[in-house]
Image (cartoon, helix red, strand yellow):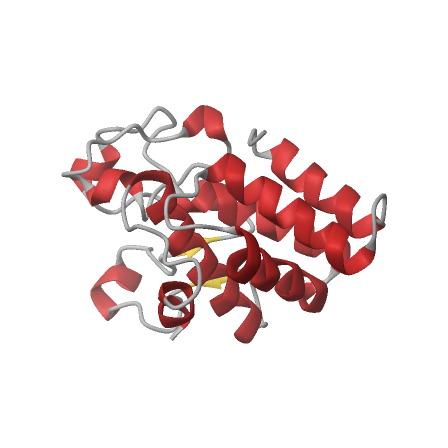
Length: 178
């Protein structure tokens, strides 16, 4: 359902950074709806995966705690094959592999959202991110565009210099998106 909202608003192209934003915004809104934690996919993991210790698809709170399960994707890792939580761990993949890293690299912007949410709460995070998606992002937006959209949305909603704007900037700084 969240991908439908994305398609009918910013319509983020499903490859490279715009595709990773597509996945990330879907994960963020999913985590906001299922507000018991900041994990994705914990309710749908197959018994065999759970037996192997794989209990979630992705973690917004601690991306590095989850191993990238696909060996081909993992081969592009610079961080031991776990989901990245900072741009210095970005997986440089060709578009023929995971659309250029749409699933793997989404964890960087997921983690920024988690950090922002820890400061402002889930409700405000949702308002800020929904406005960023529906007002500022375009189909080919990249991670830097997302930062600008989120910060501007926080300004629009809560005012220049507000704790929400400070949190938005700090969240993106922490993951190396400028």
